[in-house]
Image (cartoon, rainbow, N blue to C red; front, side, top):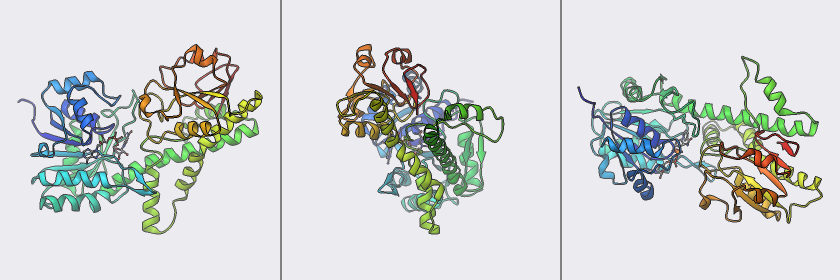
Length: 422
Ligand SMILES: NC(=O)c1ccc[n+]([C@@H]2O[C@H](COP(=O)([O-])OP(=O)(O)OC[C@H]3O[C@@H](n4cnc5c(N)ncnc54)[C@H](O)[C@@H]3O)[C@@H](O)[C@H]2O)c1
């Protein structure tokens, strides 16, 4: 028996879709990566990965099998057995923007055949698969979800930059609109992922993802608020967190930071609170509180920089702040919704010169008013204060701590007499 040549199309070749496509190739599928961004299509087909979790070598291996190619041509979706939708789900003006999912479903629909499977993977509020995606697929295909084709939802848990827990070894929650759909969705992921976790309905699977991210968002807000109080109370919150983390049960470690960023935490909980408000007419208070605390962290960081300069009899205006990190977290090039951006913008508005070091994020994505820097000894010597926002592995930490410049470390990654923690 040769490889099973089932045909999978993965709609959206971003942080989520490309890794799924690569695993599907390893699982023996014939894979089409459907992507509307022409530049990404060209890059992928010439072996250049724009997603850090996928190396150029992995992409080259997939291309060499002859069972992977990227395309922006809708006709290439024809004849699929499984379609996975992994397109963005941003917020627009405080309201979930599902236009990408709608467009993706509309492009899949004409190519749906009896017995094929469609899986939504984008993060979204409960009900999206059955209330939004199913009708679009049915209208465009003339087929019926469940009776003619399989439809399900499987949330993505990928954590860019995490080298321990990747797509293949992180359990994957799967669901379907009926038992046969669930079996089809589970069958697809069982071929590429170590362990699948079935739940009884698509809404439960959709809620699972929002629960996970809301849990994280709320707990980060909790330690962020504690960090601000502790500073005023003269207590080392980081030491308390380390000590609490020794408890082997009933506690989970979260650490303070300059705010939350990326495509998940600043957005996903608001999908849930929007839906609760819309359907039940009351607010989801935990999410609102967490949003409030986390969204104000950049202001707090700016105030701390101001206070540090003040301690050295300096004003923000005219000072040079050497900032480390515009990515939303360590070891990723993803700068979407990064809290570094409002921090840098506020510092510049107050009159500071901001120099910015980030080897992961292309300079084109830096705030225009920030000057790109490398963190050289000259950069450090010219700084009035160092603001350490993101702890990428490749930063020369010793160079920072030995420069004799005051440092505000928002990650507790540095040690030295000049270093102050958030
Ligand atoms: N990035 C993460 O860490 C992460 C983790 C878990 C879940 N998610 C969720 O997964 C979904 C995708 O996120 P992402 O980070 O991969 O986004 P991304 O922007 O990196 O990738 C999405 C890709 O889809 C493409 N696209 C948009 N509309 C399309 C269409 N109609 N047809 C084909 N391609 C289209 C975009 O050009 C883009 O390349 C979102 O719902 C997100 O919340 C992301």
